[in-house]
Image (tube, rainbow, N blue to C red; front, side, top):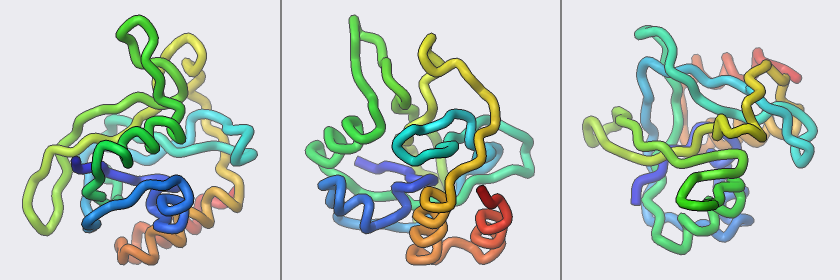
Length: 157
């Protein structure tokens, strides 16, 4: 399965700590979307990442991980994706998107904030320095663009 990570799951250490193994990873770009921090996480003590459709010049850089079924179950657990009465509930839900990579345009899944009753809030919550550092370390280790890394560093808590 192809999973597009754009937030703290860019960190290979976090993926390992969550028990998610992957057979391959590569940089990818999601065009026409923007990285935002719309909800507060008590675990991270600050805003956590989401993506939303934006202008044609916007883009989100991230990584495609090739994961297996067990990795998918682990990600669902850590992203608080749950199913109740055939509806995705919890903080995040899965969404299929098209991203560009060295292999061309690929259909992958990612997690986006679930706009359920519990998580309808769409305000900006600055990410904590720990959360942002996790994203930045992951972006650097995968070789995302220097422009993207500078932008991440400019966000600040």
